[in-house]
Image (cartoon, rainbow over the protein chains, first blue to last red):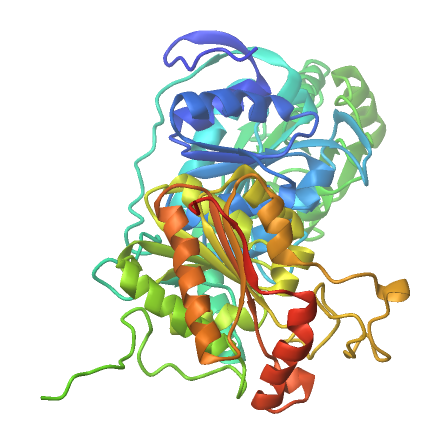
Length: 355
Length: 249
């Protein structure tokens, strides 16, 4: 069962509980959700904790309702979140599109499982496109953070709330069934980010001022043009300031492996094994999937001879890596359609086949 | 000395371009909402969840804070607003398609949870903004652009009686159906809106009003003919009245 929220002490906990506890410590005022495996522990933890703390919790009637309850709460400037998985995150795409247009600090925890359709409850990275390209209508971006450890589930949950409020843009914590269900020792430090002033836009009741409307409806094309240009200026700022990634052994690498989330852990081991065998390999692990480390990949394409993307899907992030290096070096794919990430030995074998 | 007996409610914005069709009852309904907000003195503490359809433009008229919900989701957004800020007065303003077709799950579940919010649903028996298609409240026999030979129940099924359904939910504090076809009925409608707002202020649960309204453009009628239709046809299926009032003796 869920443990208490403890700060500054290492505890052994499941990824889903870690995310939920971190959200509480980040000051999440409202949680709205609908059950789906493999993330149900988040809602279970929240149902008790939020009531205990006299914060908002609703077992929503659907994911459609859940995401819109988050939108409603966020429109008042509140920190609010929902969590879901894959086929159920599909139901939230309309809400996410509205929330980007409304510029609301929605936080969504997406714990990926197998797809398409109902699929299965095995770990997967098949929702890379869903998170980074969006299934909703119109031009928009979601900030997407991809943890690879349970500790990072905590740290990036904090960050998700911060970035969502800093940029007034929906932010996704993109975990997977493996991270959600595995236990690791983690530390819950205090929420490290400053609180963002939302007095300039939040709905509070129009006391002493005229009414504020948070809307996406723009019946005149000119208004929509102005808005979208402004929105994309914001995305440019996000790309300049918030792109985050980890690199190991890339400085002299011939082969650069690119991998995110839980899969990247086995890739790191495979890189070590490569080095022991005299193969000059390195890894770049994107931590933000949007903004994507395009510029760094472009730089590394001048050093390395080959890029190899490792992911648990049919090949999604590989497309973004190919766009980033723009034909400068070949970009290969090692993938597994669904399930636990390929073992380091398996990755090593495939690397040796490819070089 | 002259006494001012009629003025623009404080809850209405000045000089707003009027966007409803001639003879549409939305204009009257919006004004009633504004008058009630004024009379209860809650303009500065109110947050509206607007909806999709002709009703969306209510936020151009009302001088209050508002969020625009996707189609059918106003009750969910209002729930989110209220759970985050329980001290605020929160209400939705939706059409029948929004409230009782695409948003039926959100509407019924908000009522079942006893969300302490208020909801106003404009029932004009059609999808007005998109050009008059068959909706959840289209009357049996009614011709629309998607029921060209009239709504027959074998093919299209039955219209929903919204106020009665909402009244059945245990979390509902007040549910009524009113119309705007006569001055007397407009007065009754205002009383019902006030009551639906007051039950929220008292923390009693959901306050709901279904307002029978005209759509002269899509009904292809004059405003007078449209009000005749409300009286002679709509009220036979959608009988006005108070279906639930937990404050009644």
